[in-house]
Structure formats: structure tokens, C-alpha cells
Image 1 (cartoon, protein in one colour):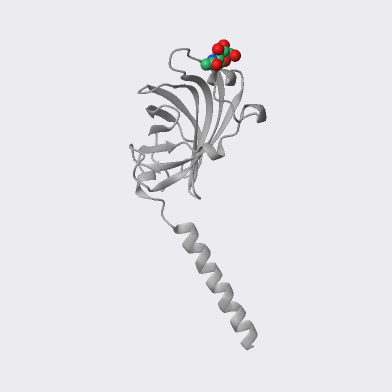
Image 2 (tube, helix red, strand yellow):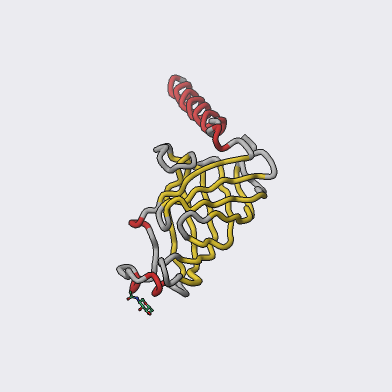
Length: 174
Ligand SMILES: *[C@@H]1O[C@H](CO)[C@@H](O)[C@H](O)[C@H]1NC(C)=O
């Protein structure tokens, strides 16, 4: 009897813990129709063909796909120090400009906000200092399920720091 009571107690604690996890509220920054994050390039997690891993001449990357795994932090500067989520992107390198070596990519990108959900977008990614361009949001999961809208990208620092402002057509299900 004492044993089963304890077991019921353990189950109750587990159930409460699960309810607490499920009902934990997403951060307020993720809950509006406008969301702003900045991606910080991490060279340690860049995926490239083995023979290009040490290549410094950007032109050699044309025709290959680069895989990015970077942290996204809240806000538009990249300096907040508060993690928003993780970005995974596959970017095909279409061309590299001769003058200052900027890359024209075509990227498919997903930003996952921990357990709350993810936003995916795709399109041209001209990674040139101070560029601003727009891409379509093509879907989402979790609180962003069925996401549609537009993401504005600002190249804060070419090849290193990219700001995204998502404009969703509907409010996340927070
Ligand atoms: C970079 O590679 C391209 C293509 O192979 C070549 O034409 C160019 O001269 C190289 N640039 C440098 C600085 O080595």
C-alpha cells in the first residue's frame, strides 16, 4: 500500500512536470506578428565539401552548397546576448563577385525557437555588406504552424551577421 501510494505520488509529480512543460509560455518576442532576430556566423559549424574546408578563395565555392548552423539572438543588433533559437541553412553558391568577393546564394533556411516551433523561408541571398532584401516565409511548425509572410534580411556584416525581420500574416499561437 505504501509502495503504490508512493508510485501514485511519483506519477503525479511527473504529470505536473509535463503540464508545466507544455504550458510554459513562449517568450513575448516570439508571439507578435513582427519578430526580429540576428544570426551570428559560427565558422566551427559551417559544412562545406571536404576539399574546400581550408579554401580562402571564395570563387572556388561556386556551384557548391554550404551548410550553416548558427545561433540567432533576439533583436536587430546581434549584441543582445539572449538566444532566440538555432538556424540551419543550406545555401547554394551561384556566383562570387570579383571586386569585393561577395556571394550570391540561394538559401533554404529554418529557424527553430527551442520547443516552441520553427519558421522556414527561402530565396535569393546576396550576402553583400549593407544589402537589404525580402524573401517569402514558406511555412512553420508549433506556434508558427502554417506560417506565411515575408522576411526582410539586412546584411549587418557580410558573411558574419545577418538581421531578419519576420512579418507574419497571422499571430503565432502563443
Ligand atoms: C580564385 O579562383 C579563381 C577561379 O579558380 C581564379 O580565377 C582567381 O584568380 C583566384 N583568385 C586568387 C586571388 O587566387
